[in-house]
Length: 265
Image 1 (cartoon, rainbow, N blue to C red):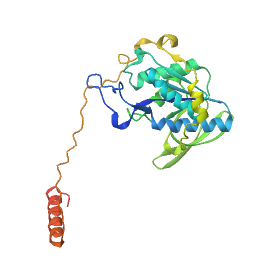
Image 2 (image 1 turned 135 degrees about the vertical axis):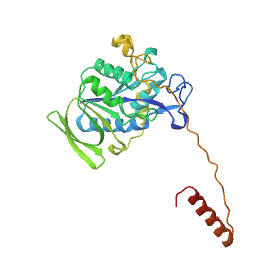
Image 3 (image 1 turned 120 degrees about the vertical axis):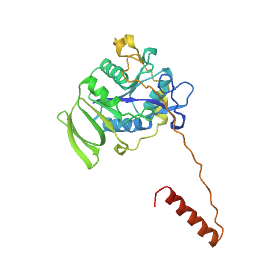
Image 4 (image 1 turned 30 degrees about the horizontal axis):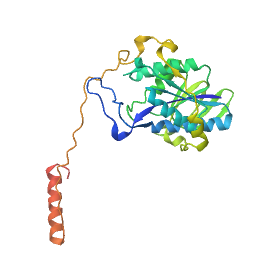
């Protein structure tokens, strides 16, 4: 079984900043990590490999420093990794990103399964995984919480839905997006870190993939951010200290008066 796991290098949650002109995430000079939700996809893939044999390939699209995320995936147990990197990819929205990653998957050759995280913590759209499946014209199951038996080219699984779980059987090749319930991600091992240190990671570019330039980067992205507003958080509250019974009664009265003024009681 050959499994491909798309991962993403994202800014730490507290460091996410947006470019007000392009509407894209500012990544230069920002501390980054592997998208936390992609770690669950990696773990699910590694467990399937342990059960059925085969290989796990991590793939990411980003600038050269994104190789750090791939090395972490190899340290966790992935067999190999691929970096999809080209200045022409800069500013890609989810449509352009999914197109580029889908063509990278095609370049990798035959595969059985693609497992992606539910979403990325920087964009929070949950669109890239389904977009890849659409470009590749393969079945997709989203919000997968459990992966069951593999038999006769089909995989049984359970999706997390509002009412509980939905049981499905999907033909392979297919793409899954998984939720946190799927598994607890493992930590990189010493042996894995050594393997990652010496891992040769190829780079796929727009040229060696033969991509359509009209689908790439900011110019090839149909989604346009026209305005960015930063929410203003105001905390002009009032602190009341009550040191005795009389002060407590006064504080309660003030609280009730405040709630009445706001129409909350």
